[in-house]
Length: 300
Image 1 (cartoon, helix red, strand yellow):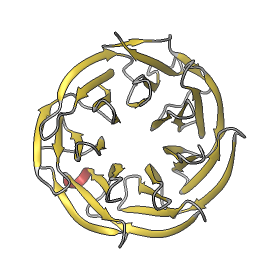
Image 2: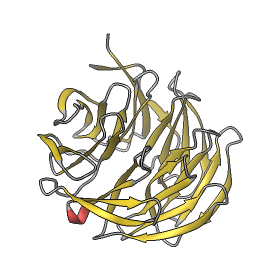
Image 3: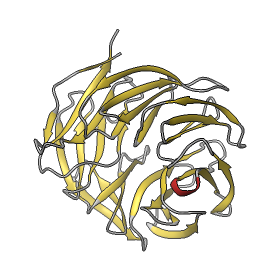
């Protein structure tokens, strides 16, 4: 069971949040504080707010494991690189569309960014910070995306089509799609590399699929916006329905429910520290009390 490690920590400027991620190696948490147009930086050990960097109407966040720099995607059509120590933007590129979720593949140095409520995925070279390719996807409204570290394929959720589009890294084009007919309005997506399975949710269902398209199982769940995976324990934490719900993944089968903790009606994004298995949630209080970040720890 998760228990609060600290009371909710207030974040300056009410505005709400989008995606959040943890740099477990450097002990930092990064959250897209979208309305304030800032990247929020939190100490993963103390749970305290360290600072914010103005990056535009930020939505997606990803970390370069080699440098610790943070890549952000914004509704201002810009991908940025942030030095979180210097607290400044060191690179940026315009991509021609509003950016939602992003993912980084350190193998080929590419940032993949999907278009918010759009029809495209943008591919950026992180070394030169140039746009390499604009990929047209089937349907519209791409949601979360994940990278297979063995094949370097990109799995992109497509809300409108009840499917996952698979992007080939060699051609930088959609090579195939995985139909998920039981899922409506695909939202959260994670890839478990050890189990070699894609976990995708939407419309009150969470399903596991093999990358080849075979369905491994499904589970009736609540409605979640975003989930994060602890790859060492194969535990999925999902935000929505007013709290954090955790699921245990199984090789070749459907997820099973672990536990749920109530947080706040506004919570919809969450991230796991893979080193400690602690969970961080961020939210804007719907009663206007402010914005908050909170750390939770698994009970013994």
